[in-house]
Image (cartoon, rainbow, N blue to C red; front, side, top):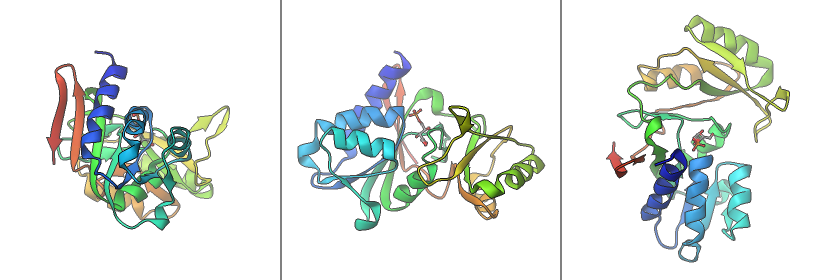
Length: 223
Ligand code: 5RP
């Protein structure tokens, strides 16, 4: 099966976790785009969605799904999102699509995080994928040096020849060379550095379930 087919498979499987009449938390990325397509076929049985990015909001609205502002809504039953890496405990690296801050906010508002991912995302230890970190621009160089002290190499993410600007008006550092053996401690530590908006380790907001796309079908991992 191609990676695209695996993503379609898990996007459709995630519909099982959508409760009738509910507002669904929706993430960002190519795997989530498959979920959004599947959700459109079930839109009559949901009240709408809370979205983690402008890109997902546009897609949802284009398919006729009502999008609520996160601050207008109390707790969400479920948040469905992809990951760049997920480990055996449900800890993740996210932010490849630069939407990590809003993703963490919507995840924190949700009772259950269902991660949808193809098998290439399942890893023994986080850190192989360069870790996205959203930063306030004036702090970017100092934060890059703090990562160097941990053995990482931080690069400012660019788009169209200019530093990428997130939905929140900030920049992204991508940090390679890290081995994140203790995701909870790492997330707590880096989150305290002045100028860090959000670190792309999702340990406090880990997945509760992962629907993993494999050639043999969708595997359900419960953490
Ligand atoms: C966006 C994310 C995505 O969930 C992550 O990058 C995975 O994306 P894809 O499904 O396209 O591989 O965290 O900020």
